[in-house]
Amino acid sequence: MAENPFVTNGYSGPEYFCDRVEETKTLNKKNIMKQILLFYVVLPLFQLVGY
Image (tube, rainbow, N blue to C red; front, side, top):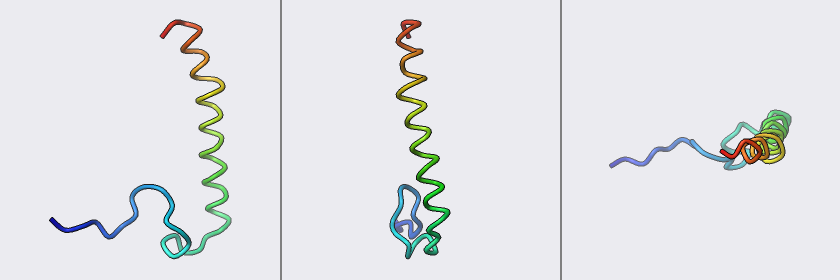
């Protein structure tokens, strides 16, 4: 079976991401905001309703 040459998960450094520093910062900020939303808003709501 052939191995996939493309990055499909995570960040493998600028050599795989065209050294797009600003775009990487934006993506990282979005990921952090999603984690904050999940842990401080969604999960407590689920606990509140007993889910």
